[in-house]
Every structure is written in C-alpha cells, then in structure tokens.
Length: 184
Image (cartoon, rainbow, N blue to C red):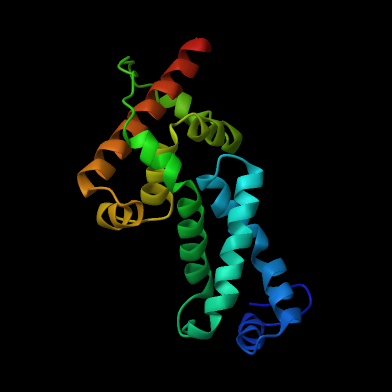
C-alpha cells in the first residue's frame, strides 16, 4: 500500500521502528482518517476522539518496535485505537453500568424504515444510545469482538456484555420504529 507521496507502508513502519520522526509524521498522516473514524464511534465528541487518536499514536510509536510485520498493520492500529478510546471512557462507562434503562416501550418492527436510513441517520441513532451500550454495540457489531473479549476489555462479565448489546439493539429498533411512525 502506498500513500500519496509514494512511500510504501512497510517502508513507513520500518523507518518508524528506527525512530524517524519524519516517518512517524507520515505514518500519522496516512492513517489519521482511519484511526479517527474508529475513535469517533467510541467517543462523546470530535475533541474526545482526537485526543484518543493522538494518545493511540503515541502508544503505536512507543510499541512499534514490537509490531510483527507479518500481521496487518491496520488491524494492529485498530486494536490500539479502540482500547485507547475505551480506556478514556472507562470511568464514565462504569457509572453507566449502574444505571437502568427506562425504555420499556414496545413498538412494532418496520423494515421499510430501516431501508430509508442513511449513514448520518445511523450515526445519530448510535449517539442516542447510552455510552456503555454504544461501546458494546460498536465493539460487537462493527469491530467484531466477541462477548468474552468485550468483557475482558471493559472489565465486566460476558453476560453483561450480552445484556447491554441486547438493550442497544432494542433501543435502536425503537428509534427506527419511532421515526417510521413520524413519516406515516
């Protein structure tokens, strides 16, 4: 993979392993958008996401000497970004674990409403979820973590991960149905 300056990813990584600040900057620029996209899913706002990205890149540069070049760099970076963003929110999520949802409204499913959603609508719906539910939904449904991995990362029981995912999905269904009823 090459960036706009024609520098191959393996060359960027090799030079970063040697401590080159120039190549660290180039690596940051090349993967900033990717990292920010991930971080935004786990952050309250753009500023929090940016702080998590910057913290993640510091971790990357400190640990790049241990990076196994036989593995996909983006996957390694994604893990660091996700864990960094989650670490930044851990205190808030622990508080959220003690809160109960009052969303007991049952609405009928409307599959047509889901088909009319665009990316902006989906992002707004995810932002409406309580932080713990949004984090678990992102980890499970988008980033592919299993419940045991989520539990270990968030320091919660796997059963709690399943419950919060279920609640997140239910809340998203309710939001979709509520939107569908508005347009009827």
